[in-house]
Image 1 (cartoon, rainbow, N blue to C red):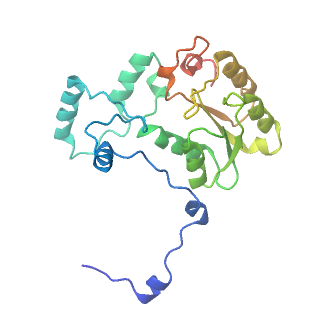
Image 2: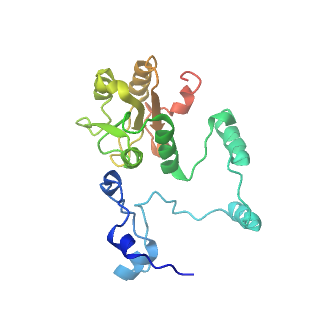
Length: 233
């Protein structure tokens, strides 16, 4: 049955929140098929969307094929088997692992879980991953954004200034991309650990270290924060 909208519904459409309307839509990279059509190319190497250019292995393909037999069922929302595998690989407690549909979902859940709408803040840097501010804005959470240093790094000294300010007491989440996308810069281990020591005594504050690109760092003074999980709660 098709129900036509009444004149009243047409004249008075439901208004989208101004905060949601003000969000700039994310422009994803074009699919390879579209690039080939648009430019008449036979081969395209896509680097714009954080996608792996290497096809999946035969072993993984076999697992995916087997899983298709259960596609009519809801999957395990706790991802138990995957967590156990990750825990063994990374040598951590499986209770420390949370699985999401990409980091975007996890960022969104962190903001909605720990921040009060129209009251709390997140703290991050300009020229960082867009999802931090987008997720905060969608959840009615305000953002502090500091400038980068002259060499395009997160300025942790400015982070400290914000956290020491009266308004900074309303910051619940600090987002640090290390290494950062899109600048390609990183914070070395000493700098980051010093900042964590500064944040350690602050109540009701969670430091989120986004290491989505850590496999690409070759610098000797870089350290993944997984090595500090037991040191900081």
